[in-house]
Image (cartoon, rainbow, N blue to C red; front, side, top):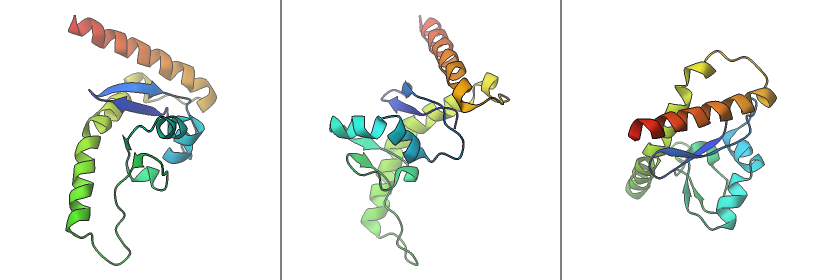
Length: 132
């Protein structure tokens, strides 16, 4: 994982944290970055994908399908509503993944964090200038 980001309303990245090895799970990275404690401590309702199952607190994830069964009507509706809320967040993550400079980078997570943060600042500046 190149970085841990969380998008606020409006599809803009609100947080870009420490890069972690690709084997680090989403929820482990979020806990290590202090994100889970921050949103839970401030009682901020947060939506997340199934990679955050079991996080608890104010983090809402899709309802798991029971083994050997299918979702009932309200579970499907709840998961669809959550997916709609997550759409802008997923678009923000897709934007991060389109940064060409990061496609072929092969350096340690300890060193790539600085590069990712620099690219993020340049990207945000270019977007601001394009709007002006």
